[in-house]
Length: 262
Image (cartoon, rainbow, N blue to C red):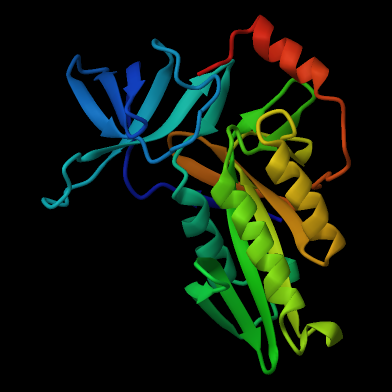
């Protein structure tokens, strides 16, 4: 599966000056103008917030927005990284509508943001007849030298909570036993050519443990990749999701040696 979408609007190139208060990033555009952009990503963005790296911003003409720029891309180590965490849901929505995710192409109805569980909204609720499928989408942009992408890049109690809700959703349904209710976590990896995805025992062992429990209880895990250029977004996959335990010491050492705390 390879799908390419040209960007409808040109991105503005600049250099990152600083990211602060989680949601803000100061950027010096190539024109010399210094602007403040919205950083949609609330995570640690490990390795992607060092001053001086090339970045790309989108621009909005919406007069109601406080900040008209949004941080979209960062270039680190010769690779382009997608940093806008709202993009994966938009990508998946379009892929579902266009029936371009082969294993999800047969669902008749697609509804985003459906309430479920105690306090959650599932990213996409799919249904056909008496069958229903709960689909959670997770953005991933952390890549380590073993070529695996890792999620999350910091402690995410919310993400672990989603896994518990999906498990409860399956277990609490009268029709789950015959496969009429299913659930899935779909990772969208915004990095070029990752070998696969793993839950990050280093950054959030609680989430990693919850992912393995969820898989044992019937929650499916899948992943697709996204590569970025200034001109286009290319989606490829599926790619493997590896839930097996692994040794974190090499990752911790590499992280310390490279001082990747931001």
